[in-house]
Length: 472
Image 1 (cartoon, rainbow, N blue to C red):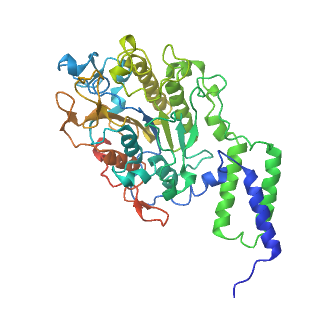
Image 2 (image 1 turned 135 degrees about the vertical axis):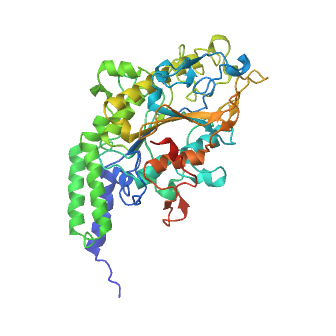
Image 3 (image 1 turned 90 degrees about the vertical axis):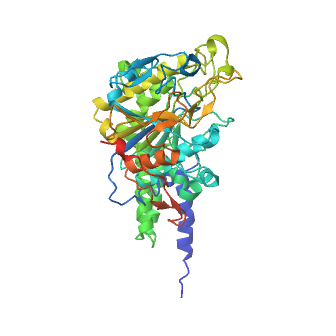
């Protein structure tokens, strides 16, 4: 016969739930809820762990391969565009003249020039890129790879496992679905999101306030509630259960996140020298790349960086965040696709060159590059020819380039080749978003066949084939 709980036990549970609500809060979710289960399930397999960490720089909008990493200097002007090709440190490999700093560091990264899929729509293409799942209805419910990494390879340090630097502007068709698939995985695996609009590290007043006590409570008051909650747990007849032991561990981690220096310190760029901040660039993309390095150094597993270079000349508020969606008809004259305006490559490419080259150098100098996978990717590329409508280069998913570095990636390597116009894959295996995602999770020690879901087994982490030949 099942014992009925005593009234004392019921009252203790009610008091406990009340106290839980005030112990720690972040964006409506307690830190303990956010962190709970981060260590519940880790991938246990013989899959080699090439990367302990990952920085994923998202060039939302789709940068053109001709203007970046796959120039066609011998093609007609209407195909090669306005920029010339320059030699890199790797013999026979060229990139755009707008990327001289990266050209000098080609020994530190690999170019995948055979990226290819069939989706030319921003919202679905960027979603499959971030989830590593196939197109269709399933992809609409898939969690981001960062959430999967947070679940299966959680941080061992007192920091969040998955951080997203700079939120995309709402009301556009390119905004990532940050909470995607969490009903299949758990909302505690959502990214810890930082920054929006002009609230970014270029502002002298910028600070991450998520580790502050809940509004209306001091740290002393939160500590009193935590102590009372702990005493109630000790008095409970169920405190010996594994679930309660685990809950206690996550409550302790939540408390240390709030009161300890590790997480707060990781987000504070004031600890870096002015010279280093200048080297990265005093724009959002540069400062976020520097912050990403600090977060990786502190133990965060995956940091996603929105590749926004900041306000263009003449802007006082952000016009766009998807600066890589460079159609010529958005602006005219000097603010065209090749101009210095919000969509202008003259504005965005030098800032990418500065930030990414500094990140590669800094990570290498600190001994972090060997264990950190750096990914730079857009959802697709651009048409080989300028369109007849005056819209410049249109969306083109059939062949484009992404960049990978660190974690054993073969520096100076080019995988795959586009045809003479940069239109279709000419050699090498076409790399879909699914295979690209499989390569990322596999490098982080999560076998693509790993299962998850509310029942623990209904869904696979990924259904693609990892590209292992790019690793040394």
